Length: 288
Image (cartoon, rainbow, N blue to C red; front, side):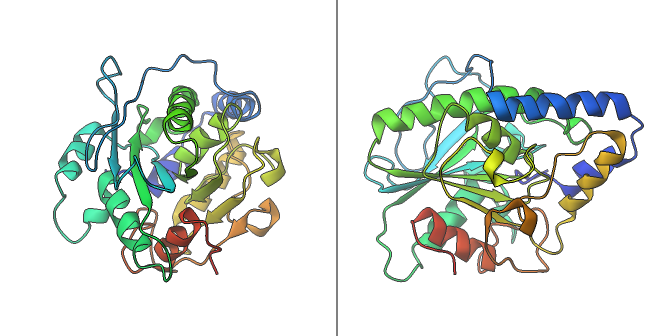
């Protein structure tokens, strides 16, 4: 399955009679978002050139982090944080270019797609670097509600943010967080603050509205009409809801237009409204 994960991940959990257990997981998720992760980082990072790995020796060998663009000189950096069922073997396959018409659905492909779209923003300087950050072991679909992945992911994302702050202190950094990855980002905010946050295809981030997130950065959210991730709200029947959808009006995030017919894995489709909007956001423009 591609880095974006699948809306079926949430749907599969709907039929599971795990009321008490899901309620416990929901409480843990909420605590992580409010208090941050206590896990030790299992990754460290190094500078790298276009298309190369940013992981330093000694990092967890199951992780994958690569950069596209010139990280050493970029004025803007986008960090793509994936959701459930983003596997290292799929990352490795996409790293060498991917194949077929859906090459942009893999995490490295999504990074290349966003980088290409940024070059089409009128008047924008070509100063973006995009990081394909598979910096945690993502859960399988049927266990996507568990907080284990987000706790370790948050610790590793904080470590990466501190690396960027040391190496590129003057660059503006945007976290682009998809699906379950939005929970990872929400937990990492307690110990790190990007310049902007983008939540796409998010099932919720364990807070009632945007003011519950530990950030002063602008928070953007987008969800396509065909994305079924919103059905995870039915997990509330089992005590395991992720909270309001960030792209919904009551949440209070800044929203951007998405191509209606695109699905949960289509946020980086070349030519889509959401890709155009995200390219503007990561470059510091308003997404009109």
